[in-house]
Image 1 (cartoon, helix red, strand yellow):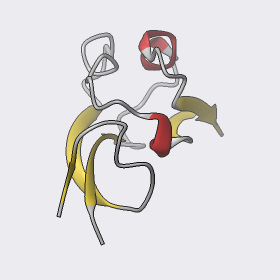
Image 2 (cartoon, rainbow, N blue to C red):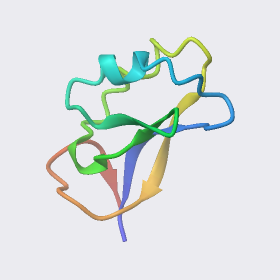
Image 3 (cartoon, rainbow, N blue to C red):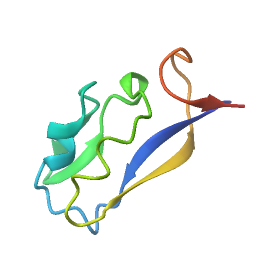
Image 4 (cartoon, rainbow, N blue to C red):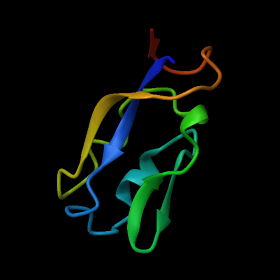
Length: 77
């Protein structure tokens, strides 16, 4: 299975402010039970636009195993 470079949100740190959601052009993130989540990872272009606006520093990019459209975002074997 391949890995994709995607934002990972720490639910213990996320305040639910939605700044990352507003910054996400491909509309990959959404609020679920007061916490931002990567709801549509296949759309994520791996641009990291969601990290900077996060006031709590609760988002980091990681290689996560998944399947999907390898023409979108950064992928590795």
